[in-house]
Image (cartoon, rainbow, N blue to C red; front, side, top):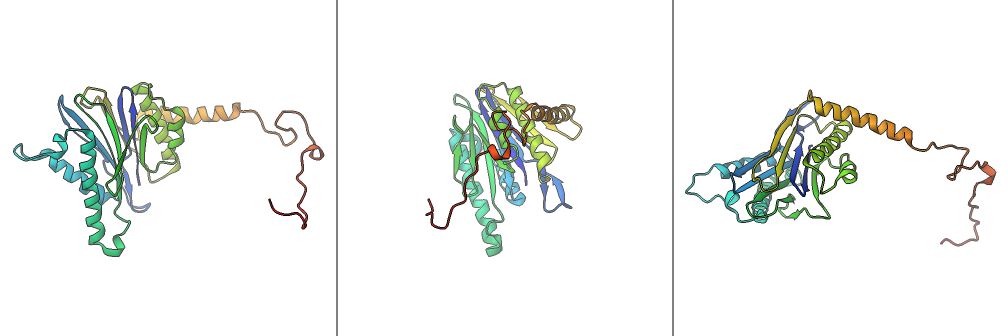
Amino acid sequence: MTYCVGMVLDRGLVLMSDTRTNSGVDNVSVFRKMYHWQVPGERIIAVMAAGNLATTQAVISQLEERAKIPEERHNSLLEAPTMFQVASEIGKLLRATVGERQDANGQRGQGRFTASIIVAGQIKGMEPRLFLIYPEGNFIEAGFDTPFFQIGETKYGRPIILRGYDRAMSMEDAVKLLMVSFDSTLKANLSVGLPLDLMVIERDTLAVSHERRIGHQDPYFQEISSSWGNALKNAFHSLPDYSFFHNSSGLGASASETDVIPAKTASEPDA
């Protein structure tokens, strides 16, 4: 499994992914899940993939080939006029790849070769955009109501982002928020693991503004993990104490003073 997050801010785009793949607890590997292509001064396109490894690698390999084709051939990825059309092309490629692998494996292949992809980027003169592409090839775009996308093991890190996200936050704070989200996911799920890949694309730079791999010995990530754990403990202990001998108003109440709902008799109808 995996965990990837793409986030839209007023200042640009922030992406983070883990690198763990596994087919059992005794077969764990590291594979990159974040890739990007750019035409300096004209466009920057980044993708993150989650799902069946053979499927995602096939899609990425074909996108890599398109980015390296000779100049005399048409490159639909780097020549598409809008990010919407970039997402559409990648969606078609994903749908075709999933279909080919499922058909080649017959009934046994149904539902086994699926994948999801996050596409992010900006083309000169246009807004930074973020898309989530489903295995069927259709996709949705991030907006004010849904300003970030997650794929893979999303449930553990999602509450962190929901509480901490602010579209006007700095890129640095966004990175910190994602690190907390990933730390919570790492603690809860063994199928997500270090190292993590981080990419920041600032608005109108049309290039990668900041990129790094976060490993097991990364001092900042270790500090984030430790500090977040301590902050949660302190927040928990600062909450009002619960008592079996006090009601919610803080006043003492014995068992005889609490409200008791009488049992329904056989003659009473259901509500």
